[in-house]
Length: 174
Image 1 (cartoon, helix red, strand yellow):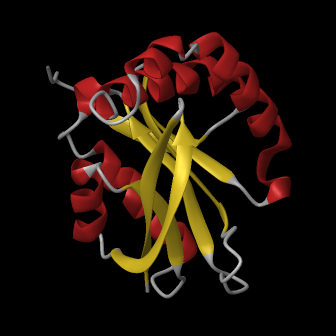
Image 2: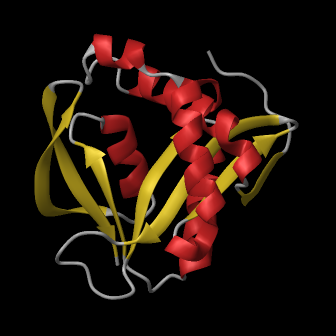
């Protein structure tokens, strides 16, 4: 079910956004990965526990080179994106990586992810190479990344999520 959104504002996330980010994170995982990740794992996700990690990460702020932007509609957090230095061994100095981009499922299709991606690209510049990892089975996300100039670069890996080895594909832009 989608809903009407108030005007969306994108800003840098602060430590007091932690619980709201965790709630979006968990809801998004539970919806987007329902047929990909084991159901028991998705059911076990706890926004309160995840909020503690978010609070720690956000308190560190940009000192570790990671920035998280949050999308807010009215008083409600509807999505976020985190960007930092690329972590892969073959990454070049200056390459950036999208660590996560998630939306509240009720807001899918309303342009929030597009605005978050525009923020990232605007911040890094058109010429900066941006990498990200996406589950191979997540066609919705893969389509979104292709629409924003990303392409699979041939690098793949398996990630164990909830006891299942899931194939991830690396995408890059530029």
